[in-house]
Image 1: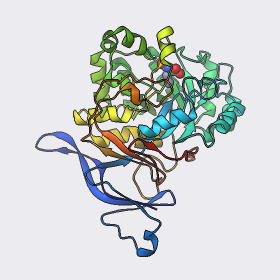
Image 2 (image 1 turned 60 degrees about the horizontal axis):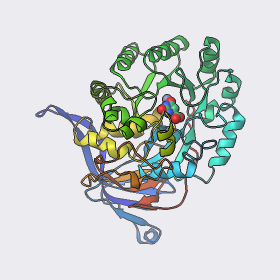
Image 3 (image 1 turned 180 degrees about the horizontal axis):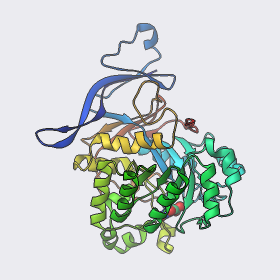
Image 4 (image 1 turned 30 degrees about the vertical axis):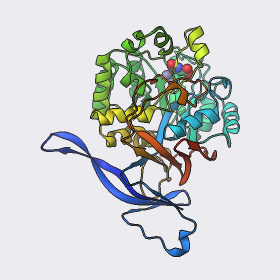
Length: 422
Ligand code: DOR
Ligand code: ZN
Ligand code: ZN
């Protein structure tokens, strides 16, 4: 059993009538986890003498305790590109960054577009993850809807590329798209610019929910706003790099110009601002990293698209909380509650009775500098090198087990998540 004492948890947000700004509604409490699940959330939990022997107690006084992050957008490169990342290093980076559940993308080698390849990925990840995980399946231009029908209840979504990107997964045939939609519980899109509108039109046409990855411009947000006002089932994601970085960040040095390339590319500071507002207003549902590591050598040698993200996404986003761009509750909603809800992941994303005991303990007073040498990912670099973290992740807890504590990692306990049936 695990007892967290004096945790500051966030129950919601409200508008302060005097300052007219959103504030977090905080509550100080103890939390008790038994058999991996949260069984009590109340002040001064009393533990009888007989069970005290099996109890691990953490005092979290003056610390925020927030639900483990659910990152729905990771390219862990395993199998196929394990020089860039693998399940062990990718998940270790997640745990360091407070991500207790990640969803892996299908553009590996082989592509996750058949049941057989999904099983291969499963076998490959077994006992090789520090955090819990799930998989996105890939939609194939050769029409793999019969494969999708066999796995749709055991994967997070079917991922479709409407723009060419890493991995040859671009689909343009309408009949193929229709078949894929029909078999999928939700379709995730890599769609940029006008293609966002194309994706929304498909959602409307097939009357099916979609998830729009990495929204990066004000214009794309406008499409989403209209679609949501129409009542369409559209969910959208923003990455920390599209919030904190822009085309100017690339101009700082030759090195930055080579490193800071990804799809979608970095945009303008005005876009940064619109995205923050979209996140604050709820127009954007999720913050996902699009963790897409390539090694330094690869980045310097030629133009490869993708940057790492999982290790510093939360600590960077805490800057947004400190700068009052969003509340801590909005952060939790976008990084834990919503991704778990949208992809129907069982027992994840909330500090609530019956949910998995996944937590992060945060010290908001430790705002040290992020550096390349602390990076765990095989890629060995971070786009946030030299920037300040908004707070420090002290401890990460997975299903009631301490898996990371002040620089020390414990066992690889990660397992595949389950999904709710509607
Ligand atoms: O920059 C990107 N990198 N965008 C993508 O869509 C794919 C990703 C990758 O897998 O490297
Ligand atoms: Zn993408
Ligand atoms: Zn991606």
